[in-house]
Length: 228
Ligand code: A5P
Image (cartoon, rainbow, N blue to C red; front, top):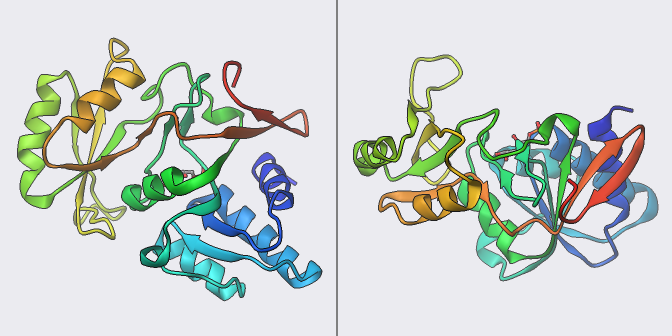
């Protein structure tokens, strides 16, 4: 069992009967969805799920997990998702997928947000390995890019994997992937992006994670603050 599976299996043990669970997106979240479906099938665990993306909803449905639409949800018990970067104070970078808004809505709506990561996700500062995804209203992309360049950002619109088009989120937005230098700390960058008109949402998740689960030497460790 690899490290991603290990934390996903552990997270599935945290789910209790009757919970409304938020499902994340990505390879680690997929392991969790599989583990949760297995508990439902083998132990008769009763859960309802709400998905952060269409791709996770399709997976959950194929495994028989009962889903509710995000529109029906006012709060959830537990949100389980991966991340692209995790800092020692549990600030996250997310959004390599296409559903930033849904991911942040679920993170905010959850009583607990458990993040599944592995050692490769730990960074000193947000943006160390990946650009920051910034979801923008289509007609605002050039103005937003210009403002972010004035703040020292470098990057552009995210192309599709085949390179023959632009990525469009499930909300119909475009995505700017912007890199910022080490002079920007995560919190200041979060505030600057929040204050930029035309930005629908961005990939910095500050003060949202309840804990980060990382496998260390084959054992799952739960980080809740300094030391992650
Ligand atoms: C999705 O938009 C991201 O926030 C994911 O949580 C992230 O890309 C994690 O993916 P892996 O679990 O595949 O590393």
